[in-house]
Length: 323
Image (cartoon, rainbow, N blue to C red; front, side, top):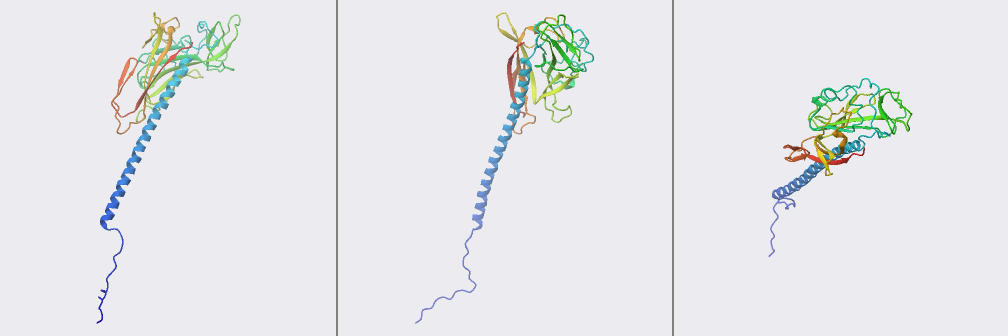
């Protein structure tokens, strides 16, 4: 008898190899988890990068501002060749546009007072009626630095204020005709006069900027005889200064303010200042999402407590006066 084999059923198909629906869902889920992890890492790296940028911004602005102040202070009181008291102003300086003058001061008395290398005010603006309007002043201390340029002028310009200097005598003048000294002491040279009034402005570029970014500014004596505002460093929020004077110990003691006006041409306590202590508080231009700053910053006689999302860094130094 012949063996019989079952006849294949028509239309039957062989089982195809591939993923089931459950396997597909598991694969997709694993892929999403991996992508989410990568996005988390990228977000963390981006956040760290932005934080590093903000820190770099703080350090750059703060160091530049501090260095600018340090350089000017080291030359404060420099009078070229002259070691003696300068002569009184013998000729008019003409019109000095926007000269910084305290109430009651006469025109030319601030610019011509080269014997006073350092002067300052404690958390006040004595020049609100002249070179620095109240709207342009954010508070804090104000520092005045007077000095001569490092190199004498080779030619004289009509509007520039100079100091005619020799060993035994010196005198401020303006224009192309220098004063004449009896006996023609030598050497003689004409140094351009440099005056800077440092302070904090509530804005960096314009009073209408939004958001406002505080900045370290200065009012500077220019070559045409005018005094005008100059931006030193953006992002500087607070500025405090103390002045060192020898005490009876003798040790240097630091004071928040010193007696004497900015136009006084006789001996005052400012003549005894031998060093200057500076604090600068730098702040980022924009707030940082997710960051909270509740720190307190002690700066001389002031303590600034904040509660916002701005990163800040405090800079401080002591500068010994050379002149």
